Amino acid sequence: MKGVIAGAVLFAAALILPVDGLPKLLLFLLAYFLIGGEVILRAVRNLTRGQVFDENFLMTIATVGAFAIGEYPEGVAVMLFYQIGEFFQDYAVNKSRKSIADLMDIRPDYANLARGDEITKVNPQKVKKGDEIVIRPGEKVPLDGVILVGSSSMDTAALTGESIPRDVKVGESVLSGFINKQGLLRVKVEKEFNESTVSKILELVENAASKKAPTENFITKFARYYTPVVVFFALGLAIIPPLVIEGALFSDWIYRALIFLVVSCPCALVISIPLGFFGGIGGASRQGILVKGGNYLEALNSVSTVVFDKTGTLTEGKFQVVDVISSGEMSGEELLYLAALGESHSSHPIAQSVVKANKTKLDTSLVKEYKELAGLGVMAEIDGKKLLLGNSSLFKDEGITVKAEDNGKTIIHIAVDLEYQGYIQIADKIKSNAKESIQRLKQLGVQNVVMLTGDREQVALQVAEDLGIDKVYSELLPQDKVAAIEELTGGLQKNKKLIFVGDGINDAPVLARADIGVAMGALGSDAAIEAADIVLMTDELTKLPVALDIASWTKRIVWQNIIFALGVKGIVLVMGAAGMATMWEAVFADVGVALIAVLNAMRVMRYKV
Image (cartoon, rainbow, N blue to C red; front, side, top):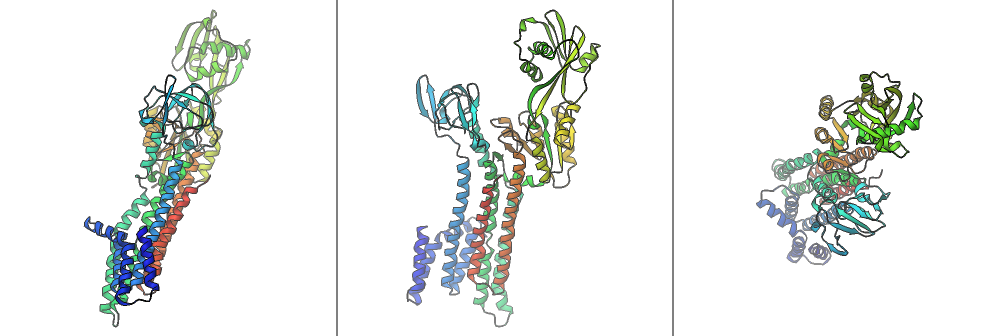
């Protein structure tokens, strides 16, 4: 930059000082080489590598040509403004990159390794699985682990985009990238640095830029063919008219050709469009949405069908007792207590929900001859009585008539000594923001919302009705889900895309098969980060419409740049060929347009919900 400044001073001196002839030419030449020497060297270096038609070549040819026809001030001025434009472009690009770097500044600098009572500050990469570390208030969590001692409040914004702190206590997990806000914690490390959440996220963000969107690829190919075409057109513009038009001067048409060359530089597109997608990825990560590449960000603009897994995605994935109905002499509390005793030896989530709902202390020593019947229920002897718990199929096999309606909830029937006593209704609670998120998706242009589940048809239909879901596939095995996705994908209109949204742990095959796989609530889940194309770092469904909105916002800005750059360049190219534009208009059509396009692309980073 110092050379450019020195050259600018010499350029001003050449314009102001009362010198003529050779001294004036030498001043302009010295200024020119100080300002543009780096550009000329790059052009020569690229020529030796076979890279002929780039912006360095165009600037060098245009400015050398200006000197050749005696337009010394304009030759230096073009190079000066080009360098100033490059400086501002670099500044804008670096500022955008810094915004993402600041946002993703979650890489820990050190870890406090604990060996007994001795604490040593070490590089996080030196800490092994099973080691214990101490995290003081205000420090970043350097590695994933489980709290052994202490409780605190964690700032998770860098990973999730959430401003509300998360309370943690002994036995709970903390992830690298969290910031400890309050208490002193002692943590047992569960993953080494290279396998930790922060390392995987940083790798994901760093690799995102390598996956170009179709628009980026198009512009790169466009520039590859566009540049040589305009160079040869400029050459024809300089040579042919003076040969065929009476009175035409070579100097006049060479000047027009030089203007044509300056204007034709495609750097406004080549720089601003990748920056637009990079900014979109950064804006999404600011909201706790990690997009693995510009290609996935652009694909979100073509989504017509969104497919949701049910349990853990649309619902909490936590079963709870919603009602206890007695049909005999026993009270509801007695029924629930008896059912909790019968389910106390089962690890099934539904069984555990019954045990949790019971408020009376259980005496499990009363349970004898416990037998679990896969897919049916439980048989046991309790205090000398034969207890039967399970679904209607089990009771039908035992010849017992049930007295409950199938209303879309899971039902556990209860019988004592083959006498029907009542039933318990259990439901998986729908997430509070599920309906709002689906409505927002439809407002954004999603035509079909589909749900896949292994649950019973009646339960699935009830959830679908509550949420406004268009189509339901129920009672599916994992391989059935892949087949359902293939069926839905086959029915899509041309150029339309399908999103599958799952929890990312047991849905990896379906995430991989969908056009765009989105992992929900995948904080710390290796399977989710590996299988999905987009990772929502919290379990909030509202993040999905935000991702589509960011993709739309990015697309608008990218196309604004394409239309603006090509429009201005096209106008000035025609004006230059017709002799109606000077080198100053050419500088604006190149450097000015590029700078405006880059600054416009940076607006993507400022997306707000």
